[in-house]
Length: 464
Image (cartoon, rainbow, N blue to C red):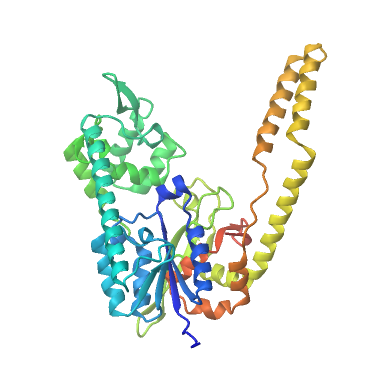
């Protein structure tokens, strides 16, 4: 039997936010399934391309992993693309065939791992493909039209289509003519008026932020400032439809937009933040944000080098946190590459200790024992041997312990095969060949969170 050539396989995984919440279709589950499929079929995985929180009806230009994947296709790095189901790849016929034209040009095929009958190689496979794409396109269009119709009808009637927690500053849900509507919040009216007055007069975002923090709300953040400057609610409209009481006239709103957009800061092109969403501030717990700088490394050619860092914006912008350190991406990347195996072993030991503690608690403090304590406590109170204050506090404590105990369950056994195989390979060589986007995908598919000490040295790493 002839030896078949090993195919270089690219794994594409996607999950929308709604699917993640409703059905638990996690990226990790798709990845594990596809890695196993590739191994069973003699393929070598050369890249994992993940679109998290993206629906298949998103515009193609917004699915960044697809573009990264196509760049590697054009560079001749891929023989076959592997995805779980066709609806993970596309549910839009026009976008599907745009990408398919590129794949055909470079001789790259795809496999839908759970749908072997769907393919581009056979007549029946192409027929099934077009049927599935047509149905998916119709479902997307129908759902989109229905949601749009219902929401627009509600908006035109002034009905609230979101909850109290999503209300912008200065507004609340109120009852008007028997209907839930968006009304001004009397507790925040002065703040909103002062916000726009100060910003229009001084034309300074930082100055406005400090003014509101000092005079109205110490917790007011830069994110809240950006939202207030961009939200059309404050001129009384939503999607261009009159919707709620206005704080600003149309003319004044337009003036404020011009001021706000005058000094928009754009992220320099070419910077890829590898660890965004993986690091929290060790002081306040806020996710660290990427920030960058550049320096000239060759005065003759004016060649520049770009540097990436991570910082706590609650400290640097909002001044609500004391930690003003910055974490260098280069140093963090080098540390993880040099110490990945060590951190993995430490993580496994931590997991084992946590599981041992849970097992000990489950063994010594069972629900049956706690229920017996409650019965004895009831008996003592009925006989007048304990006072109400003691009885009430003890009863609440034991009940709380019972509730907490019900949440302490053995963790399902996790499969670290992929990571252990990775550590056995020449990780440095493999990593050096990855594009910056693929390096980011690698870390996001390997690490859950990086914990830092207050001096921004690495304290520990949690793995997926």
